[in-house]
Length: 90
Picture 1 (tube, rainbow, N blue to C red):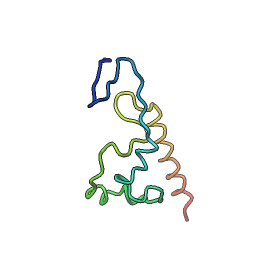
Picture 2: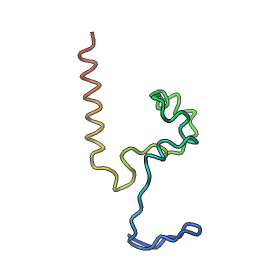
Picture 3: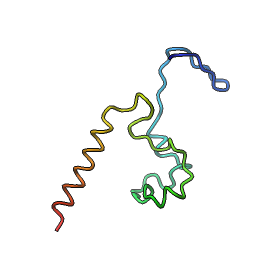
């Protein structure tokens, strides 16, 4: 599973930990124009259809076989919060 990798001039030895700076990826101006602005429309189906953003530009729970085990819990919490707001809406 662990093996040596070389990326250009960068050599990553076996067993070395690698950290991915998600805060910077999620605010990259090339991927996210106006990243500091609240804009839920950027995740709408229409926006996704015309999107040229890299598929890994937004990974709040990580990706791959070792992603965050709390992903399902976080999504369930969000759905419950929306359901509660809708129930109380008059």
